[in-house]
Amino acid sequence: MMSNSTFFDYVRVDSYSSTPKYLQLAHAILGAVREGKFQKNNLLPSLNELTSHLEISRETADRGYKYLRYLGILKAVPGKGHFISTTELKAPLRICLLVNKISEGKSLFYDTLVTALGKDIPIDFYVYNNDFYLFKQLLHKRQDYTHYIILPHFLDNAEAAEALIDKLPKDKLLVLDKKLPGIKGHYTCIYEDFENDIYRALDQAKHCLSKYHTLKLVFSSKSYLPSAIKKGFHKFCQQYAFEREILHEVNTAVLTKGEAYICVNDDDLVNLLDKMALGNLKIGEDIGIISYNDTPLKKYIAGGITTISTDHQQMGLLAAKAIKENPIQQIALDFCLQLRNSL
Image (tube, rainbow, N blue to C red; front, side, top):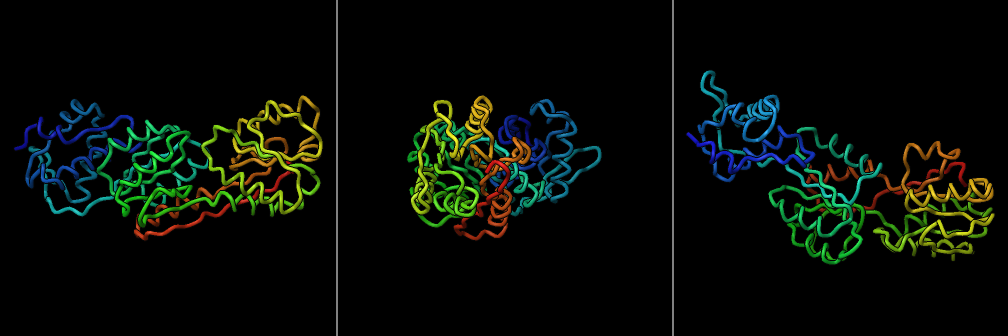
């Protein structure tokens, strides 16, 4: 019989993880069995003991044990309790997802990923807020995953972050949203082609843009997004003879009729709309607007905001396929232009 102190040395539940607690319980037990810490026919703690030590509900504890019975790992003996029925396990999927921030697009990506993988696949979902040191802390704590999915956007220490990511096993690594030059070897990368994406999107919109003489890209000097966006913007303006300017913020801009603005983040979009309202400037006539990353509200704001956006649903589907089928490849995501009244 296994002592409770031994059991709870290996089985813990993380209250900060987005993975359901019953799955955390089940996969902690699976991990201990796989490592040889628990043996066949070991008696596990009762539901009451689980609720007391792990601070989970009895329903959560029962659901975790039921899931393991479904997998054939546990057997229930009435009047005695739950026993380990086998130690011959197939390695289950367990995924660490590290995202720089929450947004509409990333929420769509996550929902698509979960649906495509199946609800019983544990995904530990952490948000590091573009902060290298928080990212480092989260990554160092968690080394027992079958896959690491990382959306790597940092305000500082990007090279140090790449060095950390490069140390991960490449067959377990999925880098999403951007390519990382510091990562060596073969790994899965599902990325935006930032320079060409904005060029192609503006090219598709050039018949609407032709009524404006100047294009202005609002791109904060503190943005985590790649400078390749600015390269694609300059390339388009040079190709089609638009006057152009890159602004670090909207608040200091003097708005003039005949300009079109490309707002990379939504705070600048809101500030631009406020300035236009104060100046009695008409959207889509006096001033044109393009916003990065489509959301449901942008369809209705100010009669409809034109957007350019990566396909986050496609990102989720491709990531799930890479995990299930394990192909190591590099895939460029689709980039979509949604024309509305703001141009």
